[in-house]
Image 1 (cartoon, helix red, strand yellow):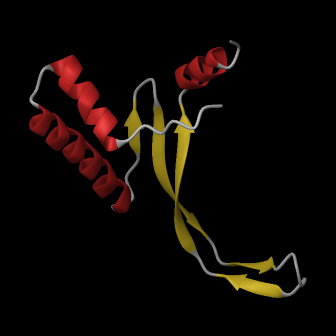
Image 2: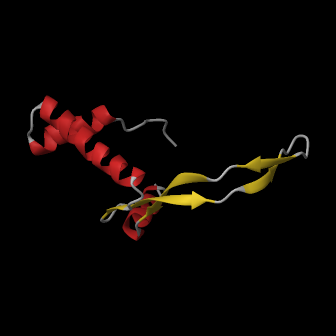
Length: 100
């Protein structure tokens, strides 16, 4: 598995090449999309991108955990966590890429 990471700059460069906006406009567009997505998630909305997947926020209840080293019980506070569920098309595409 490669250790290449897709960054905001890579996304804005792809928009620049594919769409033809200026580099500044491409960067602003990527930032605006990411900001809109994160605002929706903060508000508890789902973000569904067709053929890619769904981002959503889950509420996790308080529970008692255990320190594996000492065995001591530790309370875990309730929290909100971000989850991603890939679409079937994305799962198939990733699986096909692993068969090289």
